[in-house]
Image (cartoon, rainbow, N blue to C red):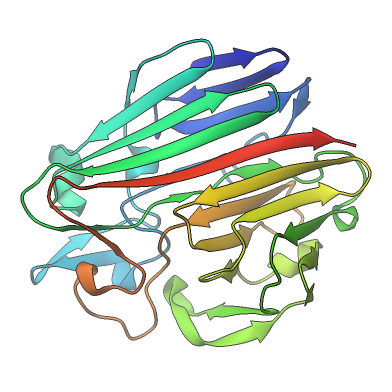
Length: 287
């Protein structure tokens, strides 16, 4: 576990999955404390796919490879590099274990940089092979809910742009259907309650907003800003003390999709020797 400190802020990152396990500002814990009986993750890195794939596999040049939900990076051992008091870099390179699932040469670097009221995360995907490489990447932080006292219903999500008040219905096997359902989103504001997450995540595909704010008005707010992440997802379990605010570059397979990974909707196709950069900033402000 690598510990970062800046003033009263601190963060802990595990080499296993390059996963952020703790972030606090002025002794206020902002991430949830994991409970294996509910969910043993805290803030996994999603790569080389986001979401579920059809029959839990991907197809590359006619060959099928098993693929866990959200990919394999969260369960991989990264190498820690360039460690300082406020900065840490973690790197995963393709190896025999990754090639069981994904037959591409790559380098994935995840940088964390801590300041007194914010944490910056930068993911850099490099194609170190000789052919175009399809991938998706995502961040899956689970914030405490509530994190500033009060009840679940005292909190809301505020988008920086008005969004459509509907989300895709997630079908069997985690596949995205062509139908949607209405949600109680009014302009830029979504009132939160545990019942919102009784069935599935709320996925905002090709969202207008680049910033979301998770707040208890008058008490405190966590702002999540993304770059290179066109999609947002909100996920929790009924009654669980966390809310995941996820930034995605891609999403789960649509129902009926049976093609090559490179042809999957919203996939990034990275040229040989190319680099994809995806960034997020988590910032906290008190009342």
